[in-house]
Image (tube, rainbow, N blue to C red; front, side, top):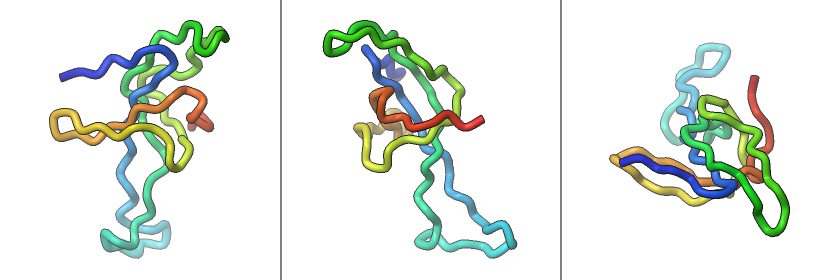
Length: 94
Protein backbone atom coordinates (compact mmCIF):
# COMPACT_ATOMS: atom_id res chain seq x y z
CA UNK A 1 0.00 0.00 0.00
CA UNK A 2 1.18 3.51 -0.77
CA UNK A 3 0.19 6.83 0.84
CA UNK A 4 -0.42 9.87 -1.35
CA UNK A 5 -0.84 12.96 0.85
CA UNK A 6 -3.35 15.64 -0.06
CA UNK A 7 -3.08 19.43 0.09
CA UNK A 8 -0.16 20.64 2.27
CA UNK A 9 0.41 17.27 3.97
CA UNK A 10 3.73 15.41 4.10
CA UNK A 11 4.35 11.73 4.95
CA UNK A 12 7.47 11.21 7.08
CA UNK A 13 9.22 8.32 8.78
CA UNK A 14 11.20 8.92 11.96
CA UNK A 15 14.84 7.86 11.77
CA UNK A 16 16.22 5.29 14.18
CA UNK A 17 17.60 6.47 17.52
CA UNK A 18 21.33 6.26 18.03
CA UNK A 19 22.55 2.97 19.53
CA UNK A 20 25.73 4.48 20.98
CA UNK A 21 26.80 7.89 22.25
CA UNK A 22 29.66 9.85 20.69
CA UNK A 23 31.97 8.53 23.42
CA UNK A 24 31.05 4.92 22.56
CA UNK A 25 28.63 4.07 25.38
CA UNK A 26 25.95 1.61 24.22
CA UNK A 27 22.44 2.74 25.13
CA UNK A 28 19.62 0.44 26.25
CA UNK A 29 16.19 0.73 24.62
CA UNK A 30 14.75 2.88 27.40
CA UNK A 31 17.72 5.27 27.48
CA UNK A 32 17.52 6.18 23.79
CA UNK A 33 16.14 9.61 23.00
CA UNK A 34 13.12 9.78 20.73
CA UNK A 35 14.43 10.89 17.34
CA UNK A 36 13.38 14.27 16.08
CA UNK A 37 14.83 13.87 12.60
CA UNK A 38 12.59 12.26 10.00
CA UNK A 39 12.83 11.40 6.32
CA UNK A 40 10.22 12.72 3.88
CA UNK A 41 8.59 9.83 2.00
CA UNK A 42 5.79 11.65 0.12
CA UNK A 43 4.71 15.27 -0.41
CA UNK A 44 1.25 16.62 -1.23
CA UNK A 45 0.66 19.00 -4.15
CA UNK A 46 0.14 22.15 -2.06
CA UNK A 47 -2.48 24.50 -3.47
CA UNK A 48 -4.92 26.76 -1.65
CA UNK A 49 -5.26 26.02 2.07
CA UNK A 50 -7.49 28.22 4.26
CA UNK A 51 -7.65 30.80 1.47
CA UNK A 52 -3.86 31.09 1.09
CA UNK A 53 -1.63 29.70 -1.64
CA UNK A 54 0.73 27.04 -0.24
CA UNK A 55 3.92 26.15 -2.12
CA UNK A 56 5.57 22.94 -0.94
CA UNK A 57 9.13 23.59 0.24
CA UNK A 58 10.17 20.03 1.07
CA UNK A 59 10.74 17.15 -1.31
CA UNK A 60 10.98 13.38 -1.06
CA UNK A 61 14.25 12.30 0.53
CA UNK A 62 14.74 15.45 2.64
CA UNK A 63 15.70 15.00 6.29
CA UNK A 64 13.51 17.26 8.42
CA UNK A 65 12.88 18.22 12.04
CA UNK A 66 9.23 18.34 13.11
CA UNK A 67 7.28 19.63 16.08
CA UNK A 68 7.41 17.08 18.88
CA UNK A 69 3.71 16.17 19.10
CA UNK A 70 2.53 16.98 15.59
CA UNK A 71 0.93 14.80 12.97
CA UNK A 72 -1.13 11.65 12.80
CA UNK A 73 0.57 8.30 13.23
CA UNK A 74 -0.42 5.54 10.80
CA UNK A 75 0.84 1.99 10.31
CA UNK A 76 1.12 0.85 6.69
CA UNK A 77 2.51 -2.60 5.84
CA UNK A 78 4.09 -2.84 9.31
CA UNK A 79 5.84 0.54 8.94
CA UNK A 80 5.07 3.38 11.35
CA UNK A 81 4.60 6.63 9.42
CA UNK A 82 3.45 10.11 10.39
CA UNK A 83 1.33 12.47 8.28
CA UNK A 84 2.04 16.14 9.14
CA UNK A 85 1.18 19.53 7.70
CA UNK A 86 4.06 21.33 6.05
CA UNK A 87 3.89 24.11 8.66
CA UNK A 88 4.62 21.48 11.40
CA UNK A 89 8.05 20.98 9.81
CA UNK A 90 10.51 23.23 11.60
CA UNK A 91 13.66 22.79 9.49
CA UNK A 92 15.36 20.81 6.74
CA UNK A 93 18.61 19.11 7.81
CA UNK A 94 21.40 19.57 5.28
